[in-house]
Amino acid sequence: MESKYSRRLQTIQNHVTADPQSMPVLQLNQTAGEFFAEQGYSVVLPEKLQTGKWNVHRSTISPLKLLSRFPDHPDIDTSGQLTGKQLPLGQLLGSSIGLYFINRPEWIIVDHACSAYSYISVPLYDTLGPDAVKYIVNHSSAQAIFCVPETLHVLMSFLSEIPSVRLIVVVGGLDELMPSLPSTTGVKVVSFSKLITQGSNDRHPFRPPKPDDVATICYTSGTTGTPKVSISYPFYAISFKSAEGVVLSHGNMIANTAGGTTGIKFYPSDVYISYLPLAHIYERSNVLLLAYYGGSAGFYQGDNLKLLDDMAELKPTVFCSVPRLYNRVYDGIINAVKTTGGLRERVFNVAYNAKKQALLTGKNASPMWDRLVFNKIKDKLGGRVRFMFSGASPLSPDVMDFLRVCFGCPVIEGYGMTESSCAITYMHEKDIVSGHVGAPNPACEVKLVDVPEMNYTSDDQPYPRGEICVRGPIVFQGYYKDEVQTKKNIFKLAQGEYIAPEKIENVYAKSKFVAQCFVYGDSFNSCLVAIVCVDPDMLKASAAKEGIKFESLEQLCNDPRARTAVLADMDAIGKEAQLRGFEFARSITLVAEPFTMENGLLTPTFKVKRPQAKAYFAKAIADMYEEVSSSKLSGERIM
Image (cartoon, rainbow, N blue to C red; front, side, top):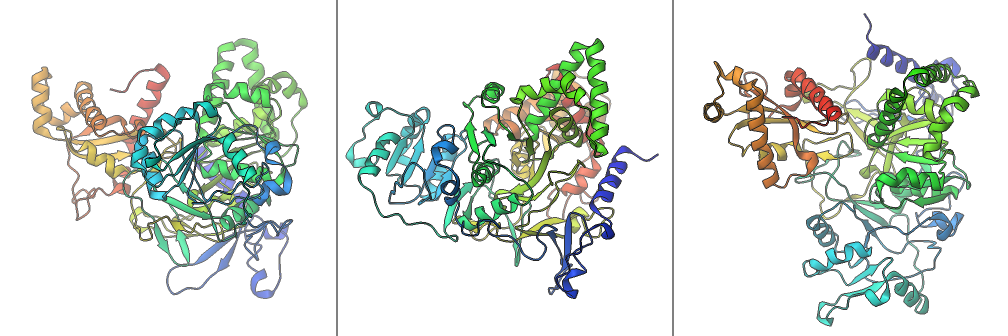
């Protein structure tokens, strides 16, 4: 019997591969025109290079030219011009921004409208610890730091370890509370208001940046170990992030924002609530896109638990978030409906099914269902949201469909990276098919490169697979102070954190019970699991000490008490190595059979073959995630 997954794949396939007869043929000439009517999402351009298959995909929106400027405003070529073209900064932003780093020796205060930037920004995540902050400040040679009063004491505690810094500006602090430092330190601490006053009284000629000038250096979060990337001219192969600084020019940022305007239209009346980290390229791109249209952005008060209160106050029309929060919204509504039970639950189910069926057939559902059921749900987000966006990790198709029905607005999913200035692909606002991330950004072109070790090829059916490679004006300038980098295994968890599994496996290898270890995670789950090949002698000795009876090593590996002991020891080792919370394995499976070249799990250099191990232990991995899911519902800790 055909599974629901194969049916969904077929639906998407039918949607993506449009009938050429129904599409406008963009036939500029006989050579190019024949390629422009093949697909609904992208066009395929042949590019003959020396080696490999070089089919290049572009958006059907702009098949003849990659966008690098706004079609309606080609004069805008730096990111600072966006706010100046539309609104004063005071009208655009709802409150002050958290923590930024600047690495420019001179200070130029333009005016409150901030019509253009004259510095390089290096934003920080507020969750970073002191060691990470010190690393980024020193690596970027930052000379000035903007911070809030709450973080000032942290900076002061290691000021001597960041010798490049000459100025600390406290946003929101009172002048009389600013600490004074000995002149020997060479560092001044001033309030933001005092800095504005000094700049107003001592103006310098403004020097606007050029498109090729660096706008920002983004130090991406979540990656551990030496950062890696694969570069293959003329394409940059982008398949994971780096912990190093990603250098983005003004031209990069403008191209990405310009590409976004071709599929999504905002208006000056639109209101955006900003709660995602402003150090993340996703959020920075959102704010720039809104600035281009002249909309307004309100910043939440800093507490995720009060986000709904902030939305009720602001009543945003645009909401951008990540699957982790959307999943909570989904769970919250489902649980509330089940709790009410009875007639209300039946009414909700009837309304949901009726509206979903209407949406999937391209029809308008009866407004009665909104009045009866869904307007109350919409009010939870302020009642005015007309666009919802999702990024950072995959959104479940079921959750996407649920959001569309309940909130009655387009839900758009995209895929991107810091190295691509944000969006590489995104859905069209009128797209009603879930389970994909849309077409290429009109500011880039995309191709797939075969990955033989993972059995991925661009000839795979029904969908080609491979390493995603991107080319165009959105591609970053390189990694700051790190020109030569190589490849490394890495993956992303559902909440957007990047994991270097080999580093974690090396930590767990210090456990007396662990002979070999395979750490697994993916972007559909928020935690890690692990397959542990045990040290037989250590495990048997521990079992004897605890009075655990067993007839074979395999039986002992399946004993819950053995799992508990091993995981406890691994947790202790992980804490000692200062693993972060998301780097701990939440569940483990103990195995007696070693990883070897003979069973296909090791390379000749004794490294774990990750794709093969994933397939070999597929059932165990699925069982562990089911166990983790059950424990979350019951509030229990896995083993």
